[in-house]
Length: 60
Picture: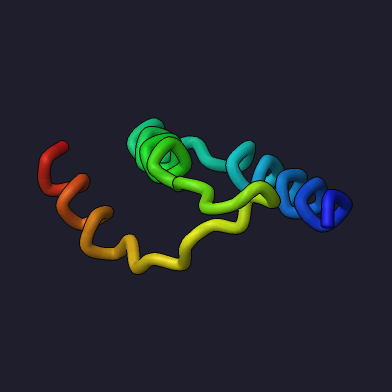
């Protein structure tokens, strides 16, 4: 499980490193800060964040 998480983290870092738009980076940061873990092994809820992102962009 830890190896899978490390692989996912590396893939996310690679993708984020390619983003040049500051607003997109702020959106990614906001989304990451608002992900809550449910259990000791850090399994996260699957939520539809589309509405949240649309509202966040409107407020920018």
